[in-house]
Amino acid sequence: MNVTKENVSRILSASFPGKTMRSRWYMDNVFDPADVMLLVKGGNAVSTLTMTPCHFEYAGTLLPLAYFCNIATMPQLRGKGYMGELMRTALNAAHSRGDAFAAVVPTYDRQYFFYDKFGFSTVVYVDRKRYTSVHHFAMDVEYESVPPSYEILNALEGRCSSIIVHTRRQYEQICESIRLDHGLIAAAVDRSDGSAAAIAFAVPSRDGTKVNVREIMAVNQRAADTVLAQISDEMPGLQMSVDTVPGMRRVALRARGMMRLVNVGKVLAAMSRRYPETEQVIRVHDSIIPANNGVYILHGGKCEHVDATLRRLTLDVDVRVLTAILFSSSKVSEVFGLHTGRAMISLMPQCH
Image 1 (tube, rainbow, N blue to C red):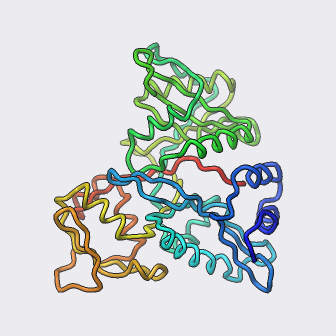
Image 2 (image 1 turned 60 degrees about the horizontal axis):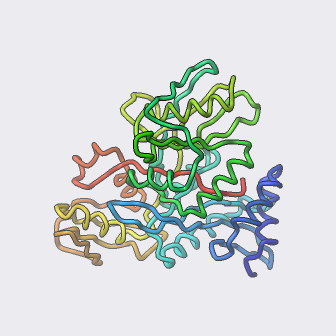
Image 3 (image 1 turned 180 degrees about the vertical axis):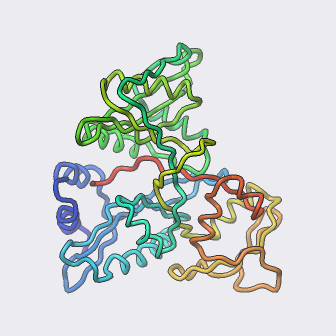
């Protein structure tokens, strides 16, 4: 069965009732059959998922990443293992496509356990800060509120590492998605030279009592407060929650998403090029993508993939654990002798 809007839309509409307007917008403006996987049983489409191609900055290199979304099975056919079958097929397809990573943002907490079975590791966290409706955010005179633009987002993403770097088209789709949720995007630049200072994406809650800042990027806290003040002014009298990159605050972090190494060789080669002093002999086990199995020797800025070696192993791990190590706190680098750092998964358009 060919991947068509009709057979995919049928599954998504049944799986996400009440999202008719968003589903229609997604199918008309974002849907690309080349990125969609479909599982057919008895001549009928039963499960689907989308692997949106993205660029992910890792160790100074832009590597291809498959963003998994619109993951759904017909409600009456759940519990039969169909999505598990499709997930395994999709991960191997992502490897064949050339992707280095896969990422997913679970909708419900229970889904983290499901994706864990397929080698995904919970490595994306946010520090959720909450403010009352009377909290005052100060607009700093050093910064000026301006209409949001792709150039501002792109400049701020360029300052970060281990992050999805959006294309202009993806940014436009995100903007439209925010508008569908009756949200807004606030941005600010440095008054002295017009350089990008901050951008934030905010949507009101369903009950209208608070505003959720789903993503904020800023050069410093003063720039962040400037765009938060703009949001507070345009959505007055609401409580605010702000998801920020984990810092030094001793708070319980909130899980945002999961990642998986799809092509271990590509990832470790990028690390070795950026950090040529890295000396590792790592055996990797991957029960889903056989091509990842084997030993990776990192030496002199290069990464060699062999079936076996007589060298002493520095690590012997499955792909899920290796993902968790690479995207851990930078303090973990001292333990394993590998470059580590938190990953960020920014907003991506989807149908629900």
